[in-house]
Amino acid sequence: MVNDVYSEVKEKMQKAVEATRKDFSTLRTGRASTALLDNVKVDYYGTPTPLKQAGSVTIPDATTISIQPWEPHMLPAIEKAIVAANLGVTPSNDGQMIRISIPPLTEDRRKELTRQVKKFAEDGRIAVRNIRRFGNDSVKALEKDKLITEDEAKRAQEEVQKITDGFVKTIDEMAEAKEKELMTV
Image (cartoon, rainbow, N blue to C red):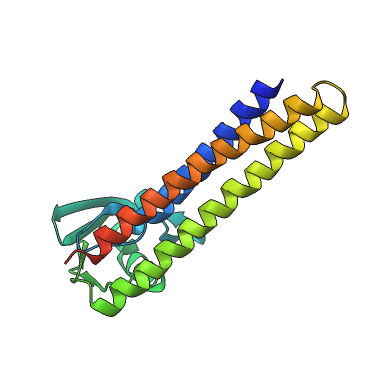
């Protein structure tokens, strides 16, 4: 039964780490990435729709993203959605497609993005610690129901803490790598 708690805790913590990794991918570095546009929603006939479902998003070179909408009349709506997303980029519309030129990051913008990385990492660590609490509560419930002994409960809580420490370390390493990537000119 304790092993079930371990596996459930590991699974949930892995999902928290993946969510943090996804958050990190939305931060732009000096080069173009389609992940930059993952959170952009376009007003598609009154329905907020992910940009990737409204057109083809490609990267023709390291500093440009181009968007070819499925329907040409969607160009203004896509352009408006990109501006509203406050990504620090300006789209240009040539009547056929939208191009986004990724400017090099300024020192201030790098520092701002580094703060954002720290916030995402802290959110990830909080999520992992909340899952640790869930795991410890599950162990305490097993002990209370006399399904495990007090010593087994103590060992189980120590194991949950070891699992937690491993996932927090993973988040810290990801944050450090992302900060290094942002600060590289």
